[in-house]
Image 1 (cartoon, rainbow over the protein chains, first blue to last red):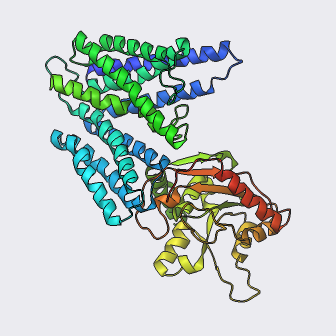
Image 2 (spheres, helix red, strand yellow):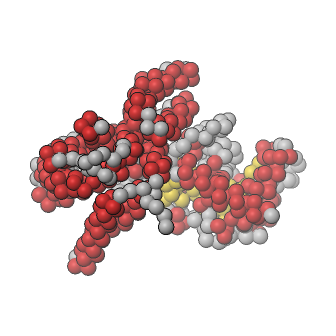
Image 3 (cartoon, rainbow over the protein chains, first blue to last red):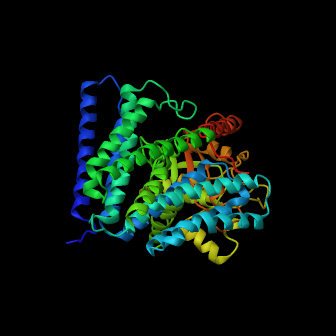
Length: 313
Length: 213
């Protein structure tokens, strides 16, 4: 018998995720049957990709803390690779990009050692100072400032921010909540992804007034508000199962996740619009690339982490 | 023994590097050949080009696939020669002819007659990273001689960023592989070359590639 590293509450919640996926698959089957005139290829692909992602995520979460850390490190790596592949880069910066990739194992090893101080300053201080030095040694000054900024922004959003998910994992269980870090990660990831879906669904049903037409013409106030309400309600409902939060704190967490998730989403949209691509990649059929999927997490992960860390640790 | 070495090299080591370190975005995979003989034609920027093309082929075709490569480069020392011939499995050809009557492509004719799949880089050598140079005419002569063998144009992008000429350190990038419709050398060499160059440009137009200066 393999021993699992997470408690029953986490397992029940993961079960709930699969129940939602079963319902989603059934709905898409019914849609295909009763409205054969319309094409649901993208919806089907999307749901299939959700099944794959949920399965990988479950495997990454339940076996051991270290498997989870390697998993989140790999997510950072894939995302950074996608980012470096779609942005314009300078030939002279090849070795600088290599150093940037090297920051990933270091950042996640601070998490492994639970060395909070290094975790929180390594990229914002050390890497921030080191990479420009490496570029100066190469000596190419044309577009230097642009390259410094672009590389560091990628590291901050895709490595520093995402690694907060990993640090949540290593947070110990508290008296009021036995699920500890795994429960917090599941809570955050589930609500962030659900918020994306809820904003989309509310927007499709009631969407009228555009919220930010220059960046994301399909986003509406109705979708945004519907998403915030849904996510906050769910936050209250499941916070008892997975987190140490009281109802008031759960409302605050729900607001943080839904609003920050929206901002993360439109930030990556702005980046893609600037570059002129629709999707950041083709890794996840129906969704696009990995950046398209973790865009909201780049904002929700650090904000939710520091909210929890300030009040409970 | 050699087949085993090749299998381990391509199906395990190369596959792992290509999938994890690089990551491929393949378009129109169904246009790749299902059997030999065939000629895969691609632009050439990196040693990784051959590796990527070999991993795209189904495992059962691995034993009949051969990258066409230059004698003067790959057979310059015994160790490299062993690796190139036995593990990578290149088909060595000479870039310069010694006599006027020599045909450097002779080994290719023999291989195609044996229903092999050739990987051919008509740019002659790895050019400037991420720039498409004009194709040389050897491929047209080859195709004219074997008009029934499909020539499949493939555009590679990103590999010249990951491992350009003269660099030892590979840097991870997602790479694009666009497979085009097969061409046949039935309409004469000039027409063939025009069609081939045109098809490569068309494939290049399918993607938006990030600038690399």
